[in-house]
Image (cartoon, rainbow, N blue to C red; front, side, top):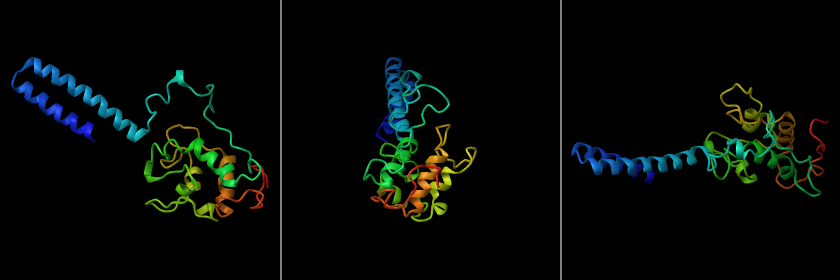
Length: 196
């Protein structure tokens, strides 16, 4: 905000210098206004697109081999390590890989965070994201299952979509009551996605 206010002030001073025909001062103020604009633009971009928006898609910093599914992250096996909760083994890896870039600590689009159990169960302004025990009534599942051409499809912008198996894991967890600490075995859930 202050960077934007500084740009407005620098532009006004630049305009005054131009009207007064002070060429040297005008050139200096024009340079200051341009520098301020660059700084304010960077802060604005970080606010709307996340902190790594400038370098995230640079080819030389590509995190994985290129390909159609280059940014698809494998989901931890259902049930995870012995004693690991279904949430930690099933849901959190999917959210971390596919959702947290826009709905995490660095960027909170729509007032929604999906980087922790409490954040997922917290009800934002538009209604509950997860309805424990009812995956079909959960906005999270609805958004993930929309057609990629739909304006509300998640994740947007050509990012790697959540796979059918990952959606199945999230659905099973929600239908089981969306618990935080129970393991897949305690919930009597199947151990592999796509299997009855």
